[in-house]
Image (cartoon, rainbow, N blue to C red):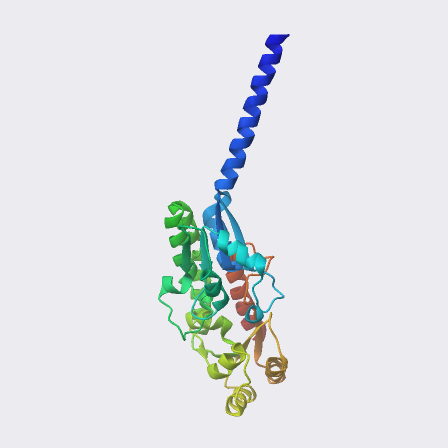
Length: 286
């Protein structure tokens, strides 16, 4: 009886030791905080289950330009091992949080720095096809996951192939937008983007000038542009008016999203969905 009791206690001790080891491993797992969910999505593909990923901006109904931090956000950034943010003015709130106390040895990735984007440039750099491979490579280096970074780079081949296909058919098409969310991708597609100053004013939540507004309307009513891109997550009376004018004058109208929608599980899926929308809009217009 004592022998059985001793064996039972040994198994119990092993069980407790295993449980504590599991808790210890969980406690040691990396914490990665991404300012925006598209960066968090790439981080998840590289880190897998070896890290907990927190994306601050993840609500598709949330206007990123109106985001304000809270105590929970500050605590998450403070406790993070790796912080990822976009930079060049898009998420200045993150830079303010990084100025507070943080975890010793914390690594901070400013994505704009990875592609050499400078202050004053269009801040929507995640629509630049160079951006996410650069981030994946950086995370692969930090997390010692070169194979996963290579797999991500390979998956981007579907995006570059789709870009090449649309560009071959529609390069040089004059287009416009209500704000410069899709700007880098429009450049990659070879489109000619008009009315940039109007877009910047909308992005900065300022009233576009009379001159810019008049030029924008004329480009729609005269047929100078063939397609209008609008941010489907952020609308206001001015941008809605431009959409209505575009539709009245048979200009193709295409919605794009500023953050990765929850139904798109990866960045590549999201970009392919956006590009398929552009391709479909062209085909339906002819």
